[in-house]
Length: 126
Length: 239
Image: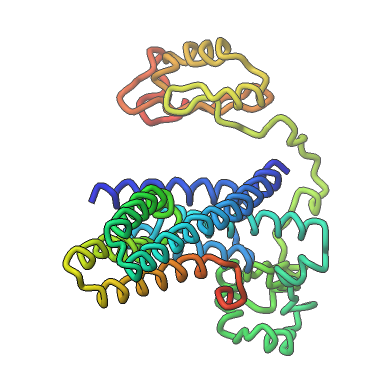
């Protein structure tokens, strides 16, 4: 019975931590998507300096989250987001706004994908 | 490289812990569900080892999930006979009263060659010696020979034999070290074991192994290179 009890405890821990991680991932991705959307709006409004600051903050937040996400999620998607986020300030710096918006769109798609891929939905299960 | 090395060791620890959690039952003859878990665990374990892009936790979670589910399922099958039949199947009799059940063999997709091979594996070369043959849920064939072909037992000969109680030998010394559980089983002390070794001209550390029964009958083998002072028993020989 000790084994059964251990199995129940491990299963409960995995279910609990899985749910917690999902909530944490949701929080992290929503924040990051918000930051990117804000930077896009600032570029539309011609507030390039503010957009730089927003992106810098977004990169910093992402790096902090990425350390923990990389322990649980596939590294490839996370690396793509990191690389894309790192490229955004350069586009702003050289005034290539078309490429900037293309890359923000790519980053948002990838961030949404990371979140959606972890959801226990029928699409993911099947 | 170092990362792969460490990840491999960590996955090894997870798999070993998982198999320990599954228990001894799963390490012998495998039931269908246990075979599935074993195959899946061995396959999943290679993913985080081979691919550094795969998170270690992502590899450990499915292993632990499979093992825990298997433990819970086997606990549930203990309670429910119907579930046990569903998960493990039922033993099938392929030879009954010396007659081969051909329909059952078809159901099991057993050829005559398969049956003969398994019978020979069990030490039965003549089909006429077999009374019953049962294919267990693990796929193993167990055979009950016809009464006329069974080995003679003391009971058949109406012989009086002494009781087996207390005659079961258990290891009390292994490679010069005392096995506490063995002492407990035999009801002896470390001092008694040392004394027995001394009586035979050895120090405890010079013994390769010593077994003891509850009747305090001992059997010991000294390590290579040691010879008893009393002259009986030399390296590698029993005393």
